[in-house]
Image (cartoon, rainbow, N blue to C red; front, side, top):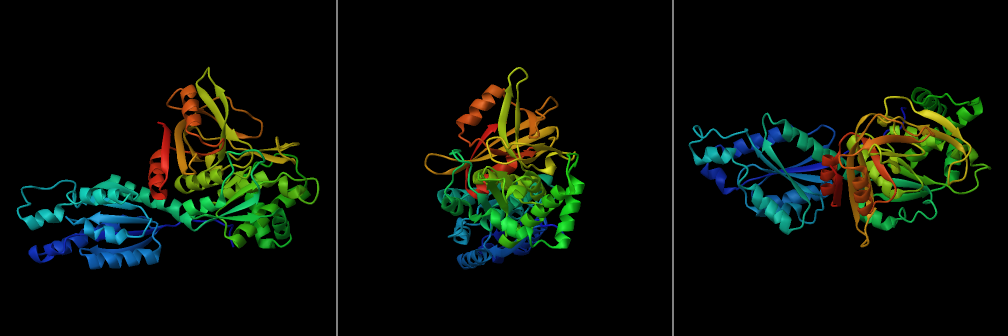
Length: 473
């Protein structure tokens, strides 16, 4: 069967604009435009669904393209400015749609050979930039979310990189629009920065919150199949450094909880999980709570972000970085080292195998600090190199916004308490970073990913229609 892996996908709309009166005036121009258009479609990644509305060169064609995109439920629209076109070939296409529009300001070649371009028709066949400002002007007047990709169709790696990046950002929107978060328990009592209105979350992102109970996990534990259970046993043995003193019963319960969570995720069609339980853990739920950090680490590896303390906003931030970077982990600012201008950043609980080249260290804790119960901690040793923080915040007017920063995980002492944490240096002094980060108003959690992802997050903010504040660089 194979363990559950959720693969994001995006529905990408694409159309080409031109002026219909040109076709009879300049022989071969329409054919040249469509040839260029076909080459652009060939540059798109394979892991998307493309909805092609074709050539739009008049109002009737624009209205038909609109119906095509509405029916397909597109997450993002590419508009190729093949030659000059009036903006009336664009606005009717996107009427009533919330998907962002990416204007493809692409020439067939990197430069125009003026000595060989000796007719207006030939010139129009290599022209693209004249129409782009008109398109962006009307998108601005419409208050639409939009972006621009400028370059050449042939031999331009920047264009390919940009097209793929926009498609990956659209995959974030697709995952959220068609997604479901499983909320098990409730937010940590008193952490008012974490509290959310699930209806507002749905209205902004399209992701639905499904409230679940611990007894559903318990019931699923009694129904897991032998095949799924064996797959979980092997996964845990392969991925964790099982050096803690475990008896056979504890290991079997760990595998059962993992299999039960996978079954529940499949049954509920979940994309992510937020979890916090503050009740009695000495009774029937003890075997569920104790191994949950290991279970959630396994789920994150399988594509299902899991956030502790019932933090739905950070669950969404983790989902964003998991799709963009293939990596996510709950993170908070642990400790400042003012002498060495660094900050320890991490969090207790689950984490992501993609953070580390090593198997995580498991520790048994007699107490989950600030919470009830005891069990396993998973400490992942974060790779050295660039890291990105992403927080989803809510302002005083109830608007959601993204906050991002890039730093570098560097060698140095870290806390060996069983929590994943890294020593991070930012491109600005740590005092200044702390001031800027706090003044931006994030909650005390964020998502951490390895790599530099701020440029991708900028595109994702456009796709999601969110304000983004970049703290650094």
